[in-house]
Length: 257
Image (cartoon, rainbow, N blue to C red):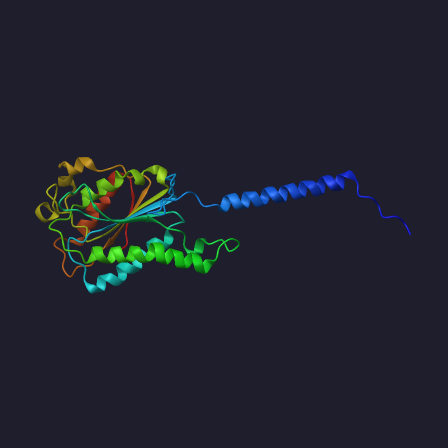
């Protein structure tokens, strides 16, 4: 019987190289899936490297009716699910008493939806439960409370948009930025009021507010116009005003309806 061939040095060198590569590969996978340090209150990254930040500005200057609640919930649901893991979602409302300081309703980062789950290292059911319990349910509760809040005497939308663009956590270093306006888009404040002047962008440009249009380059802005039985101005004029406003700001602007 012939003697089995002895394995040469090349075989052992190759085997050792494969084992070392496998070990380093496991460490690399573990490091890649290791979560970053998070803020206990917001679940946002401590290094402030938000992959995305979406801001919902909900204008409750006029009360929402019951029919509005369903589409707002659907809209909020869509925005929440679209966020990547650790993406920040902030909900603000215009503040009549301090126009440049919109009221903070909610600001928290997504722990990641089930669509982001890694089946090799995570339990999709647990991921979904965590997303709902710690992020989605509190979000919906705060949005509902904001919608039924007491109506405000004015609607300083332009001032609120300026404040949003000036937020420290909404600068270019914070990933994809998106603003969603849930409003009838009727600007009404001491600085400029559609009810007094109309949706006249030329007249607006001659005011102090017209000189304060922020730089919103690379920011996506979407308007979800709240339906009203009767508008005080032609809706096309209102839409045209905000198209001109955001065109001048450099934002990418679109209207859902």
